[in-house]
Image 1 (cartoon, rainbow, N blue to C red):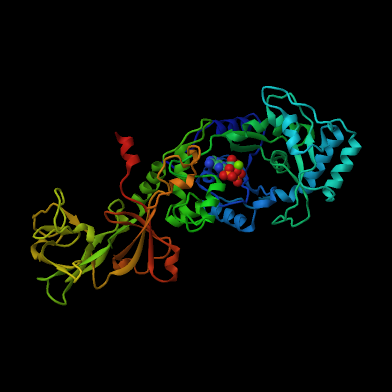
Image 2: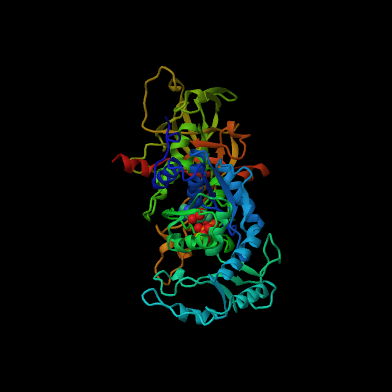
Length: 556
Ligand code: ATP
Ligand code: MG
């Protein structure tokens, strides 16, 4: 059984399994509830794999819900990108696509019910005053002077709040819970506030908005969510979540928290991602250096590699930081199995094989994937003029340089051994061409046993296709850009060399490569054809280099 078929085991799945076995639930309903205030990132992918994965494994359903209760930063563009990303990962919400904002009438009624029950009240303390009333965890807070106002008065004020009689921030509805609770979230938290903002979906219908802590349990309950999975920072909010459902006496969803994904050399907060985009540090949300799902997709990551990664990271209650090398290892391992090998020459220099007959061409048969025989072979013409990489030649070779140099020999992959006889330069002293001779006895696969130390790749000058190669590196030079020291900003640690662009000549088989095609450039790494190629001109993104530091470390 391959790794992706084995079922993951973790404490959340144990709970779900037990709830089915005990008959507490007959079917499982989970949800993935992003706020449409940015593009999804690799951390969200972990949550998506968990929410949708559990529903799939236990024959349940998973809802995709826009948690759009905060009008200020939400847009339709983000909604669409979220749908696209979840779909691309291979998950299906069926008919279960929801907007929290569509529940606002019901949520409003819930707040009214709490007021009527004596479990909520309208409070007119300013935010500044409230800081003083709320107190600190070690000392009980003070009760709001409005806490025990008549129910009728609160109901009247709440409806006038909704009708727009009050200014933002001057008045709110509070749950009446416990001003002595050591959990500050239980000290009469705000459940509704006045906010005049245009909502991308509800327009100007509302000027009162529920707070996240009040809205979230209701959304889950309205949808019959059995297991509401979220990251650890919500643990302290759980008592309020449970309180709301209990007081309203509606379906009891259960919130369970797990540790969020943190990755080295990566920022994952949406606020920081937005800053990178807005300040032009990257070229949009789908820049291949971004930790966003759209960025990873554009870079060339596959949905399978992200799922494998999520599975290997696993689900726990312990905060930790995962090495980005593990993510790279997952895609490398997959592409090693699935990507065809090709020859692509970056920073090309022309080689003229002076003793090769003018006008002659022969066809070299090349293996597409040594890991997969069924991938077959392809043919590359070889002729008098070829390109090799400038980096594979040194005019004054250093020690241990075994590639091409004056009077030295090297093997051309799938072809012959050549020797460099002459370096041709232009008037500025730059190398223009290398004149070489080949040894006709040494054709690859032939009878000659002659060996040289180095083998390099090449492309035929006559048939090569020009391309642009974008070499991406880490966006940050610092391992934990999310934990920078006081007085520093995470953007201080941006890697100035995170993108390098090379001119290249690639083998003719790539001439019509469709955007999204993934290949291994022999000796150089895995690359994918960028969507920009559709506008004419091949563009390749480097997904990862070939060096697997994570896999290597595991073997030691
Ligand atoms: P941010 O905190 O960066 O603003 P967010 O986490 O609040 O973003 P949401 O849209 O609220 O973004 O997230 C949707 C879901 O994804 C939540 O249930 C959240 O717990 C989960 N999630 C967000 N970030 C991560 C992460 N790094 N690892 C795992 N799950 C995550
Ligand atoms: Mg959040």
